[in-house]
Image (cartoon, rainbow, N blue to C red; front, top):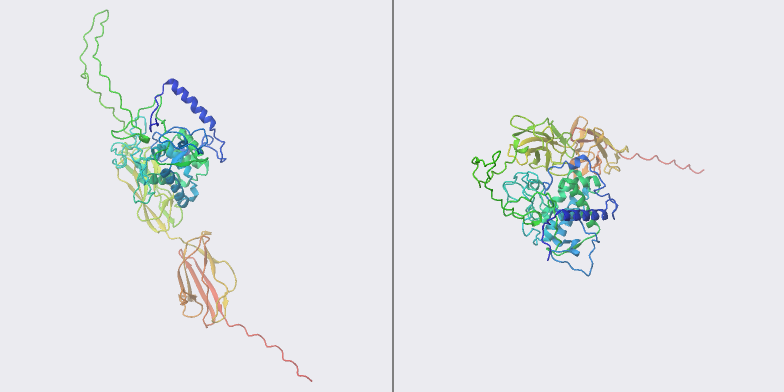
Length: 584
């Protein structure tokens, strides 16, 4: 019979020991450091300390499937067909729609963030570990799961404590958050990381196209380059902050890199084991009507035993004492345990933590960063609180990495420091709003200003004389280079005018001129910009019949000015050749 998705294995001590030996054998056979691609695997690489300092993790560190890749080659045998819901060639196969979503996400990220180098096999590895490739590909034609895939409620009972952040909009739970969909995003992360991967106008965590694209962007934030092992480790750990999770995802990544194939939707292999299974594991808490990751149905909790009637204790030296009546009548259920307040529960307000004036030129990174402190009503700093920074309004300014939202945990001083802001091309005021994730306290707005690009110096790139005969064309074009504080000033707006004189900046009505697209005379050019190297090459210049010395003035935003002399003169007459002597 086909393995049921999410089936848990009851393990006794002996079974656990056997499983441990099997896992050790599998791990040894897939030893890190030796693979077809010459890459260092996760077990060899020790991530930097900040690798584990995630911004809350995509999944809230929810449970995941722990099945290791098969030992055999991932390439299928041509004589064996897929077995719905079972094993065989489907071990390496990925359901068609799910595989298509991963590849489309890789293609989109290659265009949006080429420096990230996201491989679709990484999405496949995470999708396998998080949901068994969307329950073996149980999705409709648009890529939406046939049934919601929900993780256990994160109520602190064996899991992280994350109180509701979405009013149950995504997970149907208005008390606590639950990981949602084939890539298992928690609602508070999906709120800023969600993407529309299938262009239907919605961002649905239950849709594999949306979820795969969101996962790709999530893994590519912070300017991570996933071709570098250190950044790859950091990205995976930020998805689920566990060294075991990192090692497992790396093993599936290397497995899929060796080859895979497409199988029909709904026929993918279904995992057996989960990270919260086994001896000593906490039961999976869920709300009525919800399912655990991968769609497993949690077993009902055993009925509590009826309280026994109190016995009569013996008196010292024999006899029986009459017991005192119990303070609580027999059979009265014990009051539910109270959940201790989390750090987030104690936050009363946010305060600015010394953020300086935020100003940057278009295209530049801001030199200052936003700092926010979470405080109690008494003004005491609160650590380990997630603060979300959101760039609002019509602007192309982003955080480094291209995101408009970033979530950062407060440090021991209660301070969260936002990522570096990267100014876009739109100038003007930008608002960054800080809010507390999971806590309804007023947000704190920061104003940043993006100014136009400027130059403080202009210089010609050549020194050839600029001369022309009346009615002719200048042989050399004028090219200048703009700099700011000695560095290249790219994208700086400039104006070129053939001025009347050094003291009169109005456009001349005679002498040299430019031509517009229709061939008409133009003596002022606007809308010019320096290129990526700070260079500006003006169009060809022409001359009318007026001779003399004329001035071309080039000015840029920021006040840099350069005046160039142009000469229009008739060609010098050549000397007559000596007359021949008359013959004798």
